[in-house]
Length: 253
Image 1 (cartoon, helix red, strand yellow):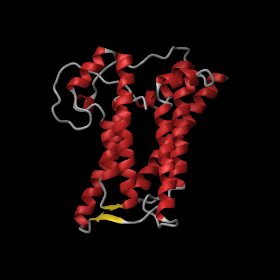
Image 2 (tube, one colour):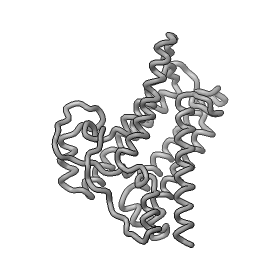
Image 3 (cartoon, one colour):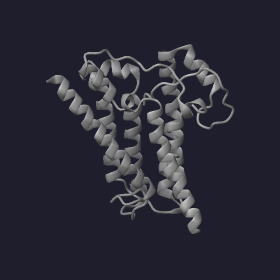
Image 4 (cartoon, one colour):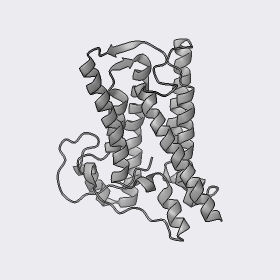
């Protein structure tokens, strides 16, 4: 019975993530969804800024702290290990959803591309960014990243094992294509408002701070192999990558 409940919990957590990430595409790009990053301002600028910054800070702290091995070691005294990752995914999704629902637009215009063809090109690049995010998760192990593999192994009475160290597809040319996809999605837009700019700067700062922490954890798991990989392959832009045996594992944050 417990195995079944854990498995159902993992599926619910995964579906919550998937719904949240789909909504975030519309939220950031101002497509379709009811609340978007550039809605009509309803509060004074500084009040809206304080609210949005608070949401971003809460997400950054939760998303980073809960991914660290020391926190996991403490956390799994209370949360069963098979659903630790699913719980992390679920909490991240809830915080993201609340942030998007209660996000406060601030208005202001940084740039606005009026040429229709250029608008379509920029929207296309933006969607390429989101596609890169999704595909990058499958290039490593999508189901391990979002907690389903952990629960499936538990369901089969098998111990959890880290994924083999390898270099799939885009990971041969950059260490973090998933983060590059997010940066493209957050920055490439036909209309950049002050609200959107603050969001893009904050999330970029978080990504640049999170990468060293993540890579430290990966180096502890994979040792010299990951150190060699980090020395050879660029972090975000596919410039200067060299061929040869290297590896990548799942993203831990």
